[in-house]
Image 1 (cartoon, rainbow, N blue to C red):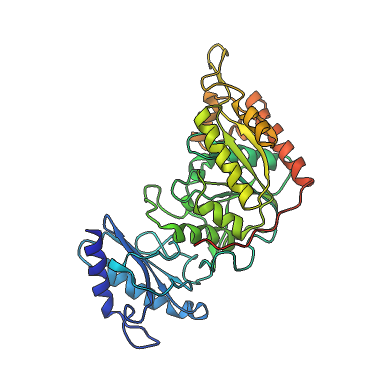
Image 2 (tube, rainbow, N blue to C red):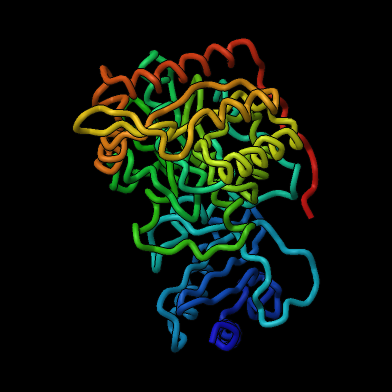
Length: 392
């Protein structure tokens, strides 16, 4: 169904004329990354960067035609200055262009897309992003489900409580969690082609979850994920910040490579549980950052022990001390342990991080101690220049 729908959309686009060359947009090679899945159609139109604004009517026309094809539930079209390498793309399902933002038909092409500024340059090229941010720290994990996002949010709030200017970037495109954890469901406002980050709990925050409907699936290929990250860094009015905490997606994929290529990361923090399988994945995360010359600032053991909400008894459900031992084995600092407590989860689900909602609690103080140690380490370590390498 996907390939047949791609071909049907491609045939329909033969009626859309290129205002510059006069031919249709397909034969002119302007249609990039045409994909279809479950009735959702996405593609980009490659145009010269300097002509992006005047080509907006062409984008709208192409999107209208695509949306009218039988079987298409939603069509998203963006303008991009990024072009795919030449070569045949059987079925039209080649590399996708940069991602849609908020607004318009479907869920795309808001203020981030029409200017064409967020297109991904060749890997390892282009200016560094976030020049006004003093320190950029990635909070990462080798696998999902270890509480990385909860840790990142509470560390960011704890840093802000120290009087620092803090930004929080949700780099998990497929599973954004900041809207829920920060209690921020509204769309950010825009000024021209610039997005104004939302402010919560003393932070400036941005997530793809602020720009799309909560139930919209992110059916994007790697280049679209990388484009989304670059746009959230390059087209958001972050302003001058002392530190930015980046909540990374689990694993060692496109998002990690994009961050290491396009911003001068000061370091990474690895979050793990005490379980052997989580520690194995955490080890991969440490080695990945080492390979791209990003220093690992330390390891945090989350869900280190369970506290009964009624009696306060402690139980080590997943073992205990594994992350500390692993950090020592790998030669990186163990930053601290965090308990598995019901209040942390309940407050996160309610959009009120425990560091802000109940700063006097033991668990909030644990986050604050780790944040203070992290900031102390950053004062003694300069930002590492982003490595320049090409990913095939």
